[in-house]
Length: 255
Image 1 (tube, rainbow, N blue to C red):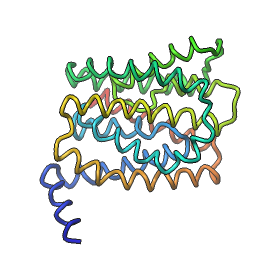
Image 2: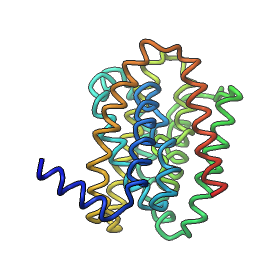
Image 3: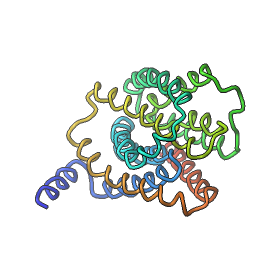
Image 4: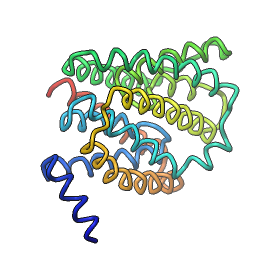
């Protein structure tokens, strides 16, 4: 108990109580979305964290949390992955992540914030419109998808960038396989982001403490979201997720 109290006081010395409570709420909501859909948890959480801590710190916070949250559902997901598609996307995308990160850490934070907001709104509107990728599916298209996704993920810090989501959801496979492909690829890209940010000395004492506090909240919410996947109609939950994404993107552009 004494350790927990000391740990909490250290975090509160770095950020305000209001910022901490807002972070806990948005991370819990993001975890629910992540557990239910297999994607979107980081995308929803990032905008609020950006406003609280700035773009680079927000990305540094949410990316490890995303991986911790995924641990709750990774064992089942790995069994359902279509590796013939995931490997080309992941390998090409991992290279592109580091290119995107080099741009991210050297760009004006205000510009990054606006790019995040625009990209979230654009891709959400595309998904709402029901636009799907109907082109060929081969190693070349998988590599292109990986390069675009990795570049956006590294450049904006949005885990599981919607480009790969649209590509995977267009595959003629069941929802379980699609969710697994999205989850595994998102984790691989997130791991690359963590390495890149660590090389740029982003992870100071305060950020590590915040990650340790928020990660259990995200993990619990992700597990709950996975349970809700069996109870709540997908269409209803999808509409909630889209609404939150539009709100998140708008917040980044306005504030």
